[in-house]
Image: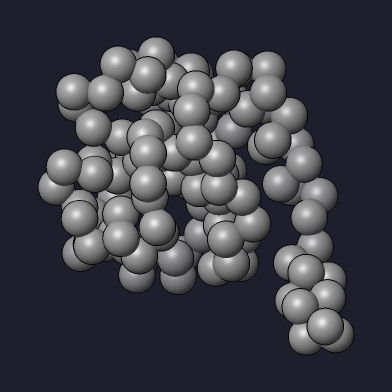
Length: 118
């Protein structure tokens, strides 16, 4: 398993050291989280160059608030420190693998430029 626990204490380090970050916001009582967890774990193993983290919403209230988590599970993806994707619910494995592939292609500099052109 390639998944790491992310907390308020190590979040800055995670952001500094990783270009692509996948974050799974979850809770132990959440049934859909129990379905998504193994899918997330399997995908993380096939993409060891990407940081896959889990954030327990029961413990990490500030991180959940910072990322505006309203329901769980929620997958948040950051590239170069910018949130490029956020989706709640169980994501099938083939879709999650497609999301990984599309994330690799995104040029964040173009996203930032588009925001400044508005």
